[in-house]
Length: 200
Length: 200
Image (cartoon, rainbow over the protein chains, first blue to last red):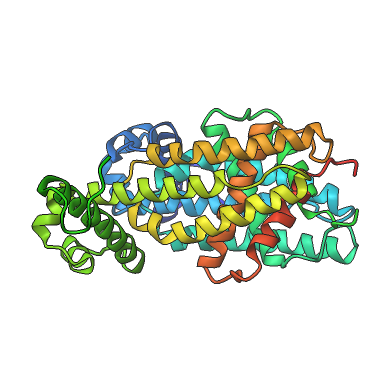
């Protein structure tokens, strides 16, 4: 690939770079606008992105398509964060790190998911949980082999409990019954209890 | 109150007894029909109750009103079952009894709630959970005083975990990932772990 000084790219290449910048600006603006107001419309998002409605519609044919693209990008970003986590070593500590990182993502996603709720099929939301759930399962299996997690309950159930306890914390915070402060530690303490071998 | 042999009641009294029988038949039929098919309509429900549509509408002005009445009766029935539970003695065993009874109710309610979902305001569903949740809280408080449940987590959070783990089991069973068989024991084992003092 030949690199050229800024402003001197061949016309086609400059156009593609422009388009990429616009798409990024539109997705950033859409995410911010939808988090602030789940009902944010295309005109508001275009304005926040600094592009015209025609440009926006050139990239995303509908509001639903735009919301789906925002969701897809957020899922991909989250996956990168979770993939970079070190889940080796003591399974208790690894669970704490996984909960803390997952919690930050859910916290960030919550408003976005609320906005996207009506535009993203439930099946797609479920599939987006598949990889995170497999990560939890691998950690639980490792902890079982190490003898620090219980093995008297089905592993799929223990994964479901992880999911359920984290989302319950999000609901409690949204309802004002729980403080966001220290929520990740609370979740980890609850899960470590639920996962402890019953004899211990 | 004067009792009279069947068929010889004064006309007004016989009419009221008829009306009561019809209301019970309509509520029974509505509950059965809605559990079998959440979209069951008024004609089907009237037919199953053995009354005409006009009679049904004489007691319940709309399908929504009928569904609300079915829900209210189911809540009252559940409350009676839970009020009769013995929650004294060993808190662990009491929690097991409470989970088993709650689980049977949720199992019965699940299809009904799915049917009622669009017709019962979320706030009413929340209020219906208030008394059951207070019952859980009292048991947890008693177990804390006895030193068998942890006291390092907010009590409202421990109540939320109860709620969340039970409903998660219902979801897992509906999705075919968990067997209904032994589910109450699984829930109790999970909660007892989550509630155990961390040092134990």
